[in-house]
Image (tube, rainbow, N blue to C red):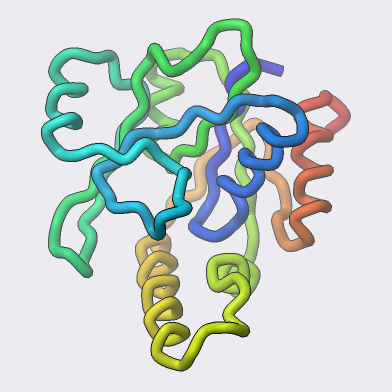
Length: 188
C-alpha cells in the first residue's frame, strides 16, 4: 500500500467523511486541497479556502500536482481546486480527495499512490448530502435541496476512471469505513 491514498467518487458518496474518519480513528492525515469556492457553512473544513490571487500565485511559483476547475452556475464564476507537491509528506500515510482530473494529474506526475473509487447510487448520495433535515423549515429545506441537486447535477458527466480499488458505498458509513480499512490493511 502506498502512503498516499487518493479517494475519488461523485458528490455525496462519502469521500470527505471517510477521510475525516480515517484521520480521527487511525491518525491518517488528510491533505486538504486549496479552493476558491466559499465554505458551505462556518463548520466547513473540507478545504483550504483561498482566493483567485492565491491560485495564480500557486500556478506561478508552486508545483501543482492536482488541479481542476468548474463553472459555479449559481454565482457565474469559475471555481478552482488545487494541491501542491509540498503538501505530501513522504513516509507518512495520508489521504487526498480529488476528482478524476486530479487523479489523472497525480498519475502523470508519477506520484506513488493507491486510488480508491467509492461508488454509490444517486439516492444514497442524495440522502448523504441532505443529511438531517428534520429541524429545517420549508424554505431552508428547499434551499438546501436545490443546492444539493445542483451539486449532483455537476456530476452527471462524471467519467468513471480506473482505480486500484472500487468500493461499494451503498451501505452505512461504518460499513464503508470497514471496507476502506480492509483495503488500507491489505485484506482486500
